[in-house]
Length: 162
Image (cartoon, rainbow, N blue to C red; front, side, top):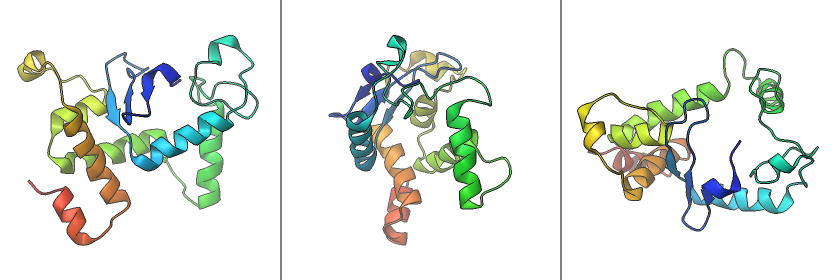
């Protein structure tokens, strides 16, 4: 469902409300993610439906990846991948969200992690907070990146230090 208009590859940022709730989200992209998205946009097929033409990701059949049910193409491809990798059980995109949030909390910036996730927090500080800087969003993204691709134990310790 990600529209091209929500992606700023030069800045390495995505601004896209969470489709499930409509709550604002902004997240920093890793350099390799920016590169992968650039390549996907160049290689993507022409969409079959006019309303899908503005999406970042299109299936090889020229259709949207998004179907809001368990039979959608993204769900099916995820199942195939997990099966191929021998990963069984309740592992899906929500598992990725849970893992991201768990690791993101190690950055020790709950408001930034909430904003990336599109979580609305009913707290007075959320009412008064006007913005969260891109630097804070990038710090959370970097913490997760270092966890996923550890350069060294020292780098991981530095990324999660207070």
